[in-house]
Amino acid sequence: MKNKAKKGTLGRLLKMIFGFYPVLLPFTLCCIVFSAVVSSMPSLFMQNVISAIEESWQAGDWSLVSGRILKYVAILATFYIVALISTTVYSQLMAFISQGILKKLRDTMFNKMQKLPIKYFDTHNHGDIMSHYTNDIDTLRQMISQSFPQLLISAVTVVTVFSIMLYFCLWLTLVVVAGVIIMSFIVKRVGGGSARYFFRQQTSLGKVEGFVEEMMNGQKVVKVFCHEEESKADFDKLNDQLFSDARTANKYANILGPLLNNIGNVLYVIVAVSGGALLISGIPNVSISGFAMGISILVPFLNMTKQFAGNINQISHQINAIVMGMAGTERIFAIMDEEPEVDDGYVTLVNAKEVDGEIVECDHRTNMWAWRHYHQADGTVTYTKLMGDVRLFDVDFEYEKGKTVLHNVSLYAKPGQKVAFVGATGAGKTTITNLLNRFYDIADGKIRYDGININKIKKDDLRRALGIVLQDTNLFTGTVMDNIRYGKLDATDEECIAAAKLAGADDFITRLPNGYSTELTENGANLSQGQRQLLSIARAAVADPPVMILDEATSSIDTRTEAIVQRGMDALMKGRTVFVIAHRLSTVKNSDVIIVLDHGKIIERGNHDDLIAAKGQYYQLYTGAFELE
Image 1 (cartoon, rainbow, N blue to C red):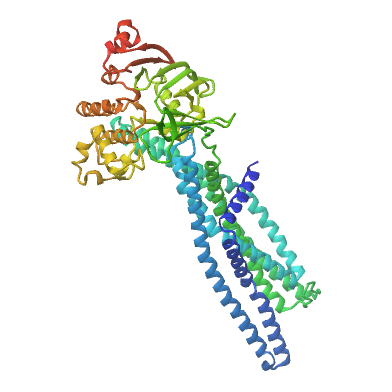
Image 2 (cartoon, helix red, strand yellow):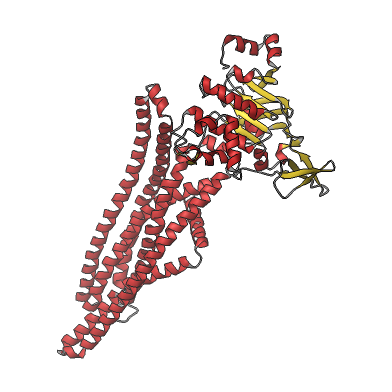
């Protein structure tokens, strides 16, 4: 099964490469083949030159053949000049083609990655994903730019030289064939082991890079808990596995070359002895050319034997690089073959306005949005004003089959209401917000937005109608203004500044060296955690969605900053439907509805006063600690 997979991978890769360069690549291959054929021609000319010298010696007159020899030399020189031009052309073209292929592959991979569901990134190591863009692409580059051309040159040379051998002498060709059979057996045995371990090497390398990336991101935590020795031990374990796989793979690879090289030397000696025996014994030569066995046949044949064995050796060397490249290619295709995020929604979000009490669609920007609902049954279109009414009906959900996370969850949030989720870690609070965004799809039940089943709404439009502020902030390389505008790419500078003021971020931004033009790098490393959070809130504010999800948005902010943020949050939440996940009671107390979750079930609901009066779990949380755990 593994060999079939690799054959399929190679065929797919070749089909894709030819699809990228349908004209340029065949032309380049023709140049490679021409160069390889020309490099095999000297043996023919050598035979002619030796024959001419033999004639001259027998006749005792050099003038009879000097013209013929000069003619052969001139033709051979012309061939070499043309071959040099051909080699230069294909080398330049291969550099262009190989880099172009890698660019297109990276583009394809990145575009595919943008279409993958959140589940993929939740279940795959980020460092291993990065390894697809670095190590796997690099092994593929070496295979395309170096190994494939050299393999083709060697293969064409082997075929051409073998044809010339048959043309000269069948007996000596049979001796060479016997040596090739032995070489093929060794390549199959040793090369097969090399292939297995080169694939393991690529996988182990991805794991090592994933671990390093994880440790770099969590270095503060490692230091705080004095976990350096354990981290080193874990890394050593992964690195030892990489060392073992790489050592074994290269052990096979390094054995193969010397073995084939020495077999080639032995084969050279055997051909020389066999040729001498044929000359001495007077056995008639069997060949296509009809030449009698002589020095003019044996000398070029020995050179061809060396050339033939050397190119077989070259093929074996390139097999190792190709195996590594194929291992990288399989991993690249693996990410390209991942199932993309399914979006079968057909309800879209459009600009609209109200005319005579009816909602009509506009082709220009307005202050009103509406859901455009195309009814497939009768072909009619209806419009529903975007309000922010969110309701869950008997929702069940499980990340893994058989492990229920949410069970029979029903709740509603009317436009403008603030709903808070409270519960222990793992109770299902964040899961509900993931379902609202359709990062995951529910197993059973229904979720409706403005009365429309969210499964019918296109995901891009659904997420455009939902703002989210996470506990973990993610800022991107660029200016402060660019990062705020990330929430709405067509927002003006004035809108971005207004959003920053609403979130309470304008004060610290204006004190930065270049204000809103300050460059941020490395996830805003030159800002404090609170400042990064304020920017993420401003980014959500500029999007101006009717529904806002705040997933522990103030948990990383100090008390003073929280007071600033809270004022901005209150302004941000005004007139919007808001779902809040928070540990701090200051964020929960003023909610219209507080929902208490336990192991995926709603056990209490009501406002703060009602739940305190009920003296249930919320009361115990409130009176037992100031942080809800």
